[in-house]
Image 1 (cartoon, rainbow, N blue to C red):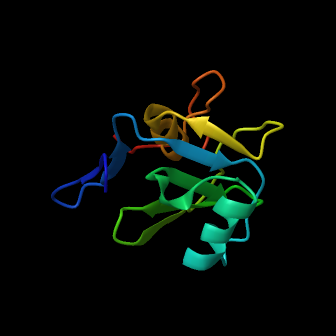
Image 2 (tube, rainbow, N blue to C red):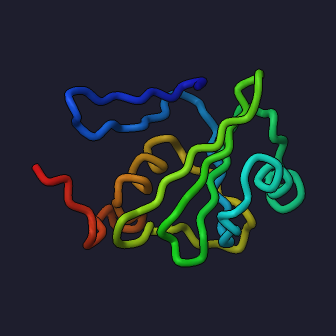
Length: 129
């Protein structure tokens, strides 16, 4: 996955990380999480006004902010990655725009339970270390 890696071993939780100049667009408004490949692709082109095949990641969340989906085109087809939190919510960006561009480090923080404003851990986030 162009710049994405997944690491984990011996039953340890893996970490999805994105590096380099990967473009990431986060949809500010909630999305119906029943959407998959075609529905999310339509959101990218009609709502976010972006080129689906640009190699960027497109990140969507539901209204309660406890689920997210990432759509990615890798030149051979579409990927849909999904995550459901067992408890708590994501710290979701706000703005006037339909989509906000994030750096890969900010996406990692968002998915790891860190507040994007002030870099604080969300109350539900516990790595169990």
